[in-house]
Length: 570
Image (cartoon, rainbow, N blue to C red; front, top):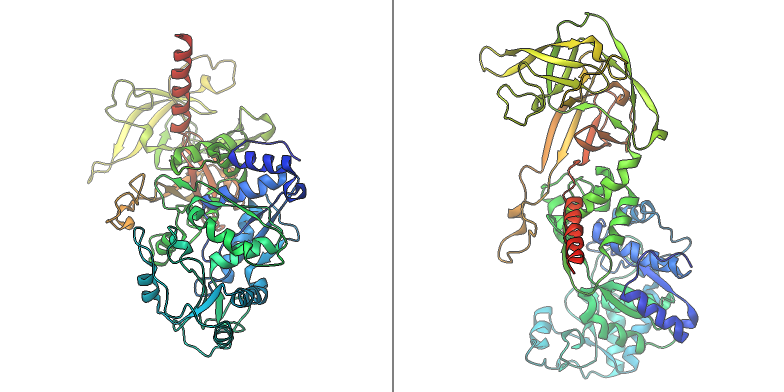
């Protein structure tokens, strides 16, 4: 066993099972995605939970694709899911399975159910089946085909497999109870006809098992002990149990346990809705850095460590709740604060000419990558007469507590000198400020014995001559509302933030000229950034992972102080 990182009601259930000797002391979980889209941060919670629990108890965790609906599945999704699980730091070893591996056995189990009088072929249409099912307050009624003989059902089911019937003409249903208070137990469909090629089995099959039938049997055949899933499957648990209890010869009798799904503010957590965003062009793909997909978060610059930390912090509960996206952002800041080299980048450049600095002269200044982590080392950065500063770091008529550059005011340039703004150059036609003319104090070079003067403001900068041009992508929340799905009668896409992506032409210090794709940095005073896959040797592209402003940390500090004050007053 490994050290337990957190505890939950699921751990309590497993601890009790082990205490009683259930499952011969085994703990065997699985992560069972449907390959009908890319995984999102909610799936990351399930991955960390299933693989994490197996590690904690010295057990096993399978990766299984529940590929029972070929109309929505694709090999692209299979490969992306495997990449995501690996990237998060988990390994299924030799336990990679597919529900399609079991199609023949699942079919034979269905034949057993027919022979036992527990399944029948129904000719009702899909609309008629819904009508016969009843409502939450009214029982359903039996299909007129419910009492077909075993022989007739076997013959019809064989013809379904042989492709003798068109899609929608008939289904195989379990014979349970049309008066059950649980609608899932009112003779649920086990098989439907789909004349669709499967990404693994080709055209071998034209009938496919329903998820609620294939999933529990796949668990049981693989020897799963604890089938951990999200809470929307709670009402399906009686059907899960019915299936494994009524099929003979299974390897195990797994127990389904439900936990609350993750709801993250300012986004949606439905693969169907995420697919809409991709297919309708609201984003640039499943790995768009604005998406909550694992591939999107990876491309944006999130680390697997930060996502695992986030999943641990939110914990495991039974009731659904909304997690503020600020908590996820806090986790990546915590992770990168120590790891990411700190460099200078001017996102919105304003040119500064230091008039009393010698023309043509270049000084190479020492600059550490991190004060918190000296192991990151240092580099040399050039300083010259012409530099860029942030446009927002200058105001012509500043308010009282503006400690950056203004006419007649002084600031320190990071690692360099104190400069003073002497003149402002404007465009004659528009009045826009296009350049500042400044002077510097040679006695104030950082680190020199004569640098004793102090000023309140310190600015980052990049030289005009040596700076490299880059595209910087600033990402904001994809949705304006914390809960885009709150209004049920309003299309969630109406809440999309039209300004979720801001693209800038920026100037970076020259050490970033050959930064590798995926490299992460802190741009001083701007946030954490990652080199995007769109980068070229001519134009690097950087994604802002997250800003430096940590609203979650401030909220936690405020809460801690409030609790401290409560305790001290007792």
